[in-house]
Length: 509
Picture: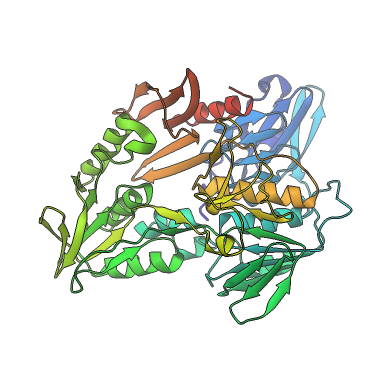
């Protein structure tokens, strides 16, 4: 993944800085032996760790300090100030931690501490399962496997996925990778050797055909059957596929996997015109990426505004104007009925010239395996607050799971990469013996050209929207309220406010 250049801003911390120059809980950026470092004071203690988030290179000097952790302003990853350990998704890798000593009222930062080990010491359940199968190696499943090992789980872990390329950074498939700004070597979450070091068995390019949730047995596509003491369903979601008339028109592509993104890149290299069906986050990110490749792009969607159902009319209008400024042409209030040679045919008969089509009209949770096994399915696999199904020792996480909303009540299913990763971390804690419920505040980001929209919380409906600042000047926050309570906040270039909103929601605000 990408990382921020190590610009050597601020003081040379090895030469020392006055203790009085450190404000309580405010990161100070400096450098140590050519590396960017932040120093944070907490009471009489001072900590020093790497200044750059290990996810996408966010500047931790602009982050939010909470207790003895710091949160990244870009995508809300969280790191230990004591050890540099990555505590919360989307960051996967630790930061360097540095020795700090006091000499009178001077603070000096010395050499690197030993990197935190793979295993974090935790109380372990004596009757922890001896083996765990995780079906699905996306954000949720791969995160669960890693966290189990980090928690000291000693049993067997088997990670199964029909995608032979998994696990990889799916959000990048519609963003920088598709636009040509990110090379493919950034896409894998880890080298294959990493999973060998963790002792995680990878069964990739394989499908689970049946599940016995009581006996905890899985049947694989080659007919073999395997027993595990715990099973985690991280089945993800599948793109909604359109039934368009016509057989001689441009090919319709969908984007969910690395192979899908590769296919779109390949066809885009020899094309001039593309039509995107659907003004979803995926659809619009694809549109932006194709514009970066200098294709003519038209977006067809049935709504009056893009993203209005999720972000409301104000941000919907902003997003439309942003894409139009970059040359995207919208055909809203429209749907496609079919394809014809060199064109997409709309319901009213209008034809849009196209060399290829990308459909981004939503996804459906992958629940067939759960349904066949008799687990409760209702717009997702229904689980309790610990992400466990009615079958003891069988869990469901990620896009296919529907769980109790700690803030809003009722069951929710949320299709966010970061939520899926945090599901994986939470279910690992449960399997390892911690019986905490899942209460993380949802977070996602969506990239459109040089604009990132950060969204924290969850609002399926609201009775008031408040815009603070100016969307036109690209400096704004949008609050979604119901009954006077803030359910969610979307922001543009107000990263600190987004972090503070997340913390307030965690604390019951």
